[in-house]
Amino acid sequence: MIKNTNIIIKNKENIYGGDYLHWADAMAKKIIKKREKQNPKKYLVASGITPSGHIHVGNARETLTADALYKGLINNGVEAELIFIADTYDPLRKVYPFLPAGYEKYVGMPLSEIPCPEECCKSYAEHFLKPFVDSLEDLGINLTLYKSDENYKKGLYDEKIILALENRDKIRDILNRYRKEPLPEDWYPLNVVCEKCGKLSTTKVINYNRENKTIEYVCSCGHKNTVKPFKGRGKLPWRVDWPARWSIFNVIAEPMGKDHGTSGGSYDTGVKIAREIYNYQAPEKIIYEWIQLKIGEKAVPMSSSSGVVFAVKDWVKICHPEILRFLLLRSKPTKHIDFDLKAIPNLVDDYEELERKYFELMKKREKGVELNENDMDKIRLYELSTPKIPDELPLQIPYRFCVIISQIAYDAEKGEINMDKVLEILKRNNYESIDSIKESDFERLKTRLYMARNWALNYGEVLKIIDLEKAKEIYNNELNEKQKEWIKTFGEKLREIEFDALSIHELIYNSAKEMELNPKEAFLASYKILLGKKYGPKLGSFLSSLDRDFVIGRYSLTK
Image (cartoon, rainbow, N blue to C red; front, side, top):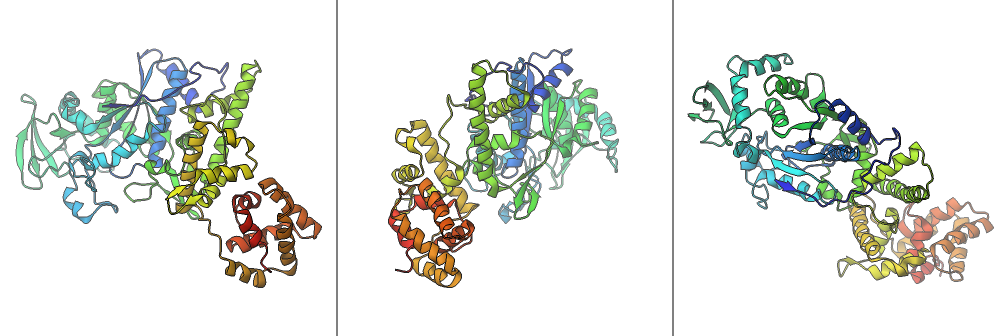
């Protein structure tokens, strides 16, 4: 069990005077009302995953939905806990595209008992689980982690295994109600780990001795034995394991994918097995929609097994954790999300607009101004998105601009971003307070610059200024006479102004207007002689970020 407790929750009191609730608070309120007769001492919210491959952003939606509900319960004044159960004792179902061919021999073995594919962790399960667990602190998720192989080996499921074996006919009848092909009469609700080959999915229970609490099994490898199916020797199949764990941990609520929550799915059978076999009221279900990864014009459902993923561990290489929380929590779980890596700058802009609004609204609230429903929703969304809320509005340098700066200020020889150069560029872009930047803002800026550079190199556009000869060729062959005249005039006037973003921006428009040239034509000409393209970053900021002599030289192509 691993406990992650590094989290800051500000404004824990319920600040909502009426029913102005984020969906997580509304959901928590509904669950509390529904369970008030039961009066649980603790509202336990569960989440989990089978670490058969990279744990991706789509998987994170379940955990963050559970986390939001957990915080919603706290906000409604009840004691709550969030747990995460990793299904590390599930078998490897096939050799996935990201695995070496030699892993064929491990198909059918529990994930916790298979070697790490890169020999960096103690097991296959740990290799894919560890990066996700390591990301929990950054994501501001406070949970208790359980691993199913440890749970089984500790005997946590032993009593549930006996109940399942002694009620196998009842369980089979429940499952058969939702099956096209009924389970055979000799079916048992248990999988056994073969003592000879170590596989879980190739064994079959052929008898259960109720008096001795032993089972007889055979394996396709030829091994046969009579054993007590406890402490990890036996494992319940998923549709029985799930309701068993509800009763073991006293789960009150659990998010689940729409496949589990559909009519006749594992939740429906779990409800009946929990009630009829384990004498437990099933948890409240929270259905969430898939997140699709946008690849070009297509949106493809994320899947570890198919290799269509964007891993959670890779998110923090390109963007701040709170932005991922914002992406997943601003919509109800039932709303479909298309995850477009190219749209990261837009997502950051949306979050920072919310952040500015939050501090503005909090100042109003401190002055006693009554806030409306929309304002209260914004406050709550920011709180749920931001695990570590700063005391005041932090310095906001737009992500798009950081994409440009990070590439211009990168020192290839040293392999690092030159922060002195970054600060100079920011001064030229009218960030006048940059001289007195706080240490926390400086460190956050530095982190964002490296994230933005990684994003540009992998998912955005690499900023590549064409050489002088290519620029001259474009100038002579692709620009009209009016554009050529403007470039010459603009280059001369650049020498006369302050070299900052605002002054350059004004000069672009004013000089084009004086020559009766459409500003769009001026921008087009500029991007062509600088980047060899018809488009580019915000021109005033871009030019002010470059060396002044270089810029004047580039707009003096006739000399």
